[in-house]
Image 1 (cartoon, each protein chain N blue to C red):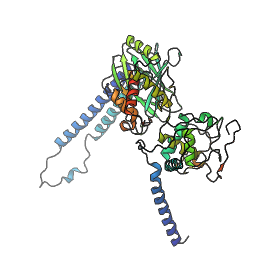
Image 2 (image 1 turned 120 degrees about the vertical axis):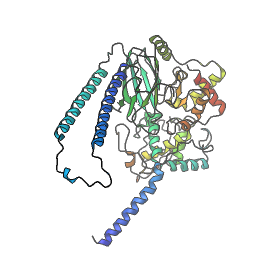
Image 3 (image 1 turned 180 degrees about the vertical axis):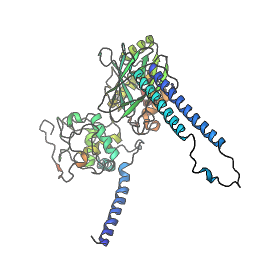
Image 4 (image 1 turned 90 degrees about the vertical axis):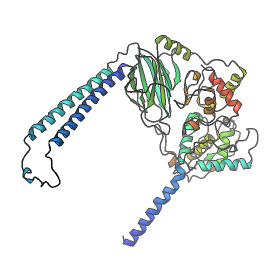
Amino acid sequence: MNGVHDVLAPAGPQALALFHLWNAMLVACVVVFALTMAVLAVALWRAPRAGERTRPDLDAHPRREATLRRSVVWGIAGSSVLLVVLLFASFFADRALSALPLADAVHIDLVGHQFWWEAHYEPNSPERTFATANELHVPVGRPVLIRLRADDVIHSLWVPSLGGKKDLIPGRESTLALRADRAGTYRGQCAEFCGYQHAKMALVVVAEPPADYERWSAAQRAPAREPATAQERRGLALVEQTSCAMCHAIHGTRARARRAPDLTHVASRGWLGAGAVENTPELRAEWIARAQKFKPGVNMPPLDAAPDDLAAMSAYLGSLR
Amino acid sequence: MSSRCRDRALVLAVAGVAGALTAACEREARDFLPPRPGAQVAPAASAPASAAAIALAAAMVGRYEHNAYAISAGKRLFAWYNCSGCHANGGGGSGPALMDDVWIYGGDAGTVYLTIANGRPNGMPAFAGRIPEDQLWQLAAYVRSLAGLASADAAPNRDDAFLTRTPESFADPAKPETVKPAVATGRPQ
């Protein structure tokens, strides 16, 4: 799956604060490690040389090392200072995370399911809200306030290029504030083991210029496109009459269930099954017929349909841009 | 307790644990492959159900009834497909209760399966063709577990959300099964 998934390439202030903290920890640990190794090397170098025939120097045993007290005091003092410095670094990183200004934020409700992400944009304004799944678009430079909920078990949202992890816990609500300062495609991942296909529970976050974001959200808000060709019309009829409509919703059609990803604009997304399969006509038909082949344990049931029926459904879904 | 008696108790305990372990294998098996072609038993809604179809459905439901994953999947589907819209959580509403001992059309596995697949008069919709075969079997196994007719060690012990009633695994299997004939009262039983 394409998209940046890199803690060391921060694309926003939240990830940057964590990146600074990580750098501070790394420097501290490297210095401590290097000092320890250097002291060990000096001790080995200073140790009396001895051969096979040298008799053990038992006289030295009762002598105390001259600088023992000084070494211990310096060791404790150094460690304490370093720990306090890291404590402050951690504290200020946490302060920086919560200091993101949230005026003019894009509100997103994100619900974790086994094994996909359900997103509702602008849930508080009925005329602007719309649903999508497994792919978020965010405007560059504008904060995003994500309200996190879980439907079944504990999940965790982690988009390393934009921020830290936050758990989604059934029965609880939590929020995560992010901001992308650079346009790009960032990969997110469920970071709390949630079942068989935890590994294939990815989230694409596309950060784009505000004008592009407005265009995208206006397109997402529109109902599904009418089928244009005979094949697409047949595909729509099949989607409405078979098991698809029992779980999926396509706005403007008779498919209105809310148990699986919203398919109103499924062709605008690059991947199917939360990053499991690329969204191409052939793979889409194969996914409809046998999703278990790509993602064993996914809740999408197999569909026993003729190849041209599958092609018609794939063509119809492919037209839903 | 004499030492001989203690030895015997130990042997019994070991045998019991070994038996439980081997019996539990079937309980946890998960099969993610689609059912083989030809495993479809739901006849068209208009055609009368053949005895062979009922027997095959009963055999499949029987297999699913010993599998904890299949029954809990059926429990999830029961909510997803809005069975609870009419049957509530088994207690019944505008549809008949499923956790009691009254079965209007019969509580055997094949009949429960056909009821879900083909629907019944007075409001029960037909789900064959709407949902896949293995989900029909899972649902049938779960519906029977509501009345305590599925294997108690495979039936769900808890709900994912708040418990609304006694868990399925505690349903009393000793209830006598009574079959009430379908009388045309003009409203669902």
